Image (cartoon, rainbow, N blue to C red; front, side, top):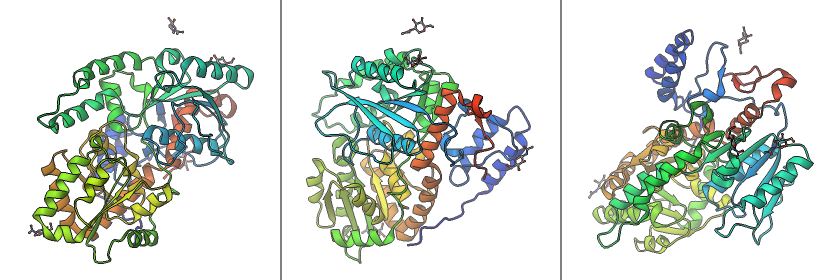
Amino acid sequence: MAKDHPTFSSNFYQLCCFLFVFSALTPMSFVYWSRCFAPCKTESAIALPKQNQTFDLLAYPSAWNHLSFSPGPPPRLLKIALFVKRWPRRSLAGGLERHALTLHLALARRGHEIHVFTTSSSSAFPDYPDAKIKFHATPPSPAGYLNQALAWERFRVQNTTGKPFDMIHTESVGLLHGRARNLSHLAVSWHGIAYETIHSDIVQDLLRGPQEPRPSVFTERVAKVVDEVKFFRDYAHHVATSDHVGDVLKRIYMIPEERVHIIVNGVDEETYKPDAASGREFRRKVGVPDSATLVVGLAGRLVKDKGHPLMFEALKQVFMENASFQRNVYVLVAGDGPWGNRYRELGPNLLVLGPLEQKQLASFYNSLDVFINPTLRAQGLDHTFIEAMLSGVSVMGTRFASITGSLIVGPEIGYTFLPTVDSLKKSLHRILGDGRGVLAKKGEVARNRALQLFTAAKMAAAYERLFLCISKGAEVKDNNDYCKYPLPRDRWR
Ligand SMILES: *[C@@H]1O[C@H](CO)[C@@H](O)[C@H](O)[C@H]1NC(C)=O
Ligand SMILES: *[C@@H]1O[C@H](CO)[C@@H](O)[C@H](O)[C@H]1NC(C)=O
Ligand SMILES: *[C@@H]1O[C@H](CO)[C@@H](O)[C@H](O)[C@H]1NC(C)=O
Ligand SMILES: *[C@@H]1O[C@H](CO)[C@@H](O)[C@H](O)[C@H]1NC(C)=O
């Protein structure tokens, strides 16, 4: 299957980019430009100003992934402190830990000096021979969090004995707001905020069985949002990992716009890429016959809040109602959890594979015609969509704002459904109706979008620029203000 770059254009895109050029001459240019991005997103997102006019990066309203930063070596090497509850030891870590690993490994490989303040555990920290990463582990607090007093003392020693830190980065509340207060060289990345969770609460309550009691968290959630609104402002800079969360932080959490920056997660583009041969081999290995019409994949923890009861019910009904679907569609389920065994009940074309290591997971994606993530958790941004997209696979996901606003932005990339059995069944019928050719085409568009916006390199370049900007000092040396974009060193398209 050729997964090369398609060209994508629309009249709207041309009109909007045309408008941009003219609007650049007026004070309204910013408004026009940010509007421009919505329709431009799919391909040239990346509509850069045609003039050489620069703007203030900290006030940039869209995802920094749309900008093109210099791929060259960093102009200044930073000493960065990272506060993260846990450092991942296995490849199946959760989103926040994966983000910490992917980002800081990339920054360290670019030459920055990374100090990780995290909790100790029984297994040793991995060795990264090509990266300057130093671990400072402390025993966890009784509740299992990063012990703030101990970690901060380690930080202080590092800050006074060696070169002082240029920048502090915390993954969520790794560093609590009490300590973060008044630190200007600090950025926090949010992976799931309470406001987003309200949408999940509503969805899960609607799916609750008549005998199940409503969980108490349901009524506590709004109070939690109010708490967050109050303490979030103590952090100097905020990184939203989806466009939606950026909007919520500015509008509902009322954080000043120049302190909220959107950088959508990236994943390792060297690991997740199209490889038709390894996909074919994977299919054969797990027992998908060549005659299969479609291969559909699910991955992750096979638990209730990831939407597996819903997926199970939708597949069961579709199979019952349509024998051709049951015969010809193969469903590969990667991952672990209570719903693994339930899926096996659906018959021989449901192949439950168990948890996969990263390399196998990459082949798994390549074996698929479409990847489905039926998650009911709206928090953060699921890496699996991006992994599938980078592999050149079309994606299907729940209609949560972070997913539709940043990843599955239109039907040219994939499918979205409401978290109901009926809506999910409709989407399943649609993929079968569309067939392999249409899915492959969508997979190509998905791949191009992910390659332009959601690679680890892209994410690291954006964070590096943010850190250079916030930590200042650099402009003294080479006359560049890293809070401005573009600089002569940035890549123009
Ligand atoms: C504007 O940018 C172009 C291309 O990046 C460059 O060749 C040109 O010299 C710049 N002009 C000015 C006035 O800076
Ligand atoms: C780190 O050390 C520098 C230089 O002594 C000092 O200015 C800075 O306030 C220290 N940072 C923190 C967070 O204590
Ligand atoms: C932070 O700064 C504010 C105002 O400058 C000051 O009142 C407050 O005591 C400071 N808090 C800490 C924890 O240093
Ligand atoms: C089964 O699904 C396929 C594809 O959606 C459709 O073409 C076919 O008519 C369906 N058959 C029945 C019996 O509903």
